[in-house]
Amino acid sequence: MALIKLKTLEEYLQGVDDFVSPKVCLEQYITPSHIASQALYAVQTKYGDLEGRTVLDLGCGTGMLSIGAAMLGAALVVGTEIEPDAVKIFQENCNGFDLHNVDCVQADVLQLRDMYGGNRFDTVLMNPPFGTKQNAGIDMDFLRTGLELAHDAVYSMHKSSTREHITRKAAAWGIKGTVVAELRYNLSSSYKFHRRSSVDVAVDFWRFIPSSPGPRKTS
Image (tube, rainbow, N blue to C red; front, side, top):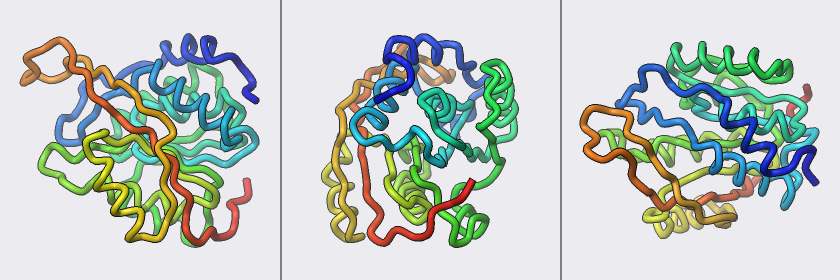
């Protein structure tokens, strides 16, 4: 079950502020509210992985997934973001929604394993960089980190064109991965090099099960 209706969740998430000056090197795009609401609603209604759970949002940007998870009943949400301007907007968004169980930590995702040690979150969410700006493989680095920090499940968005590659990676890592939903990610023009007002990208929403769950993180 979910605490609020899907339509209501999407309407709330439409109020999440976007990046002011997005950094192309970090592939900063806000997750569209309709994509975030559908994905998070599936996480809760199909698997019950949000309500009452501790949630980690990797590369959280301005907080779209974190805020949505909190609205669907997460006990604690921690977003991690490397860029300070995004962290500031994240915090302003949380204040605007009067959320007190959501926090944002400025940190490099690749350093989180050392930060959190053996503690794990119930659920890890992410919409990682796709690795198209001279950072090939960053999406897999995010996913590997998420798998090491999740107790129950990792949910991640990846371009549908990488499905076979991710399937092979999951098999090599000995984990179970399932495409929960196929989404159409409409990216609005954000950078000067964009020649079209928007582009439609096919995106898979994956659910992964860590191979060896560790101790739960206590709130």
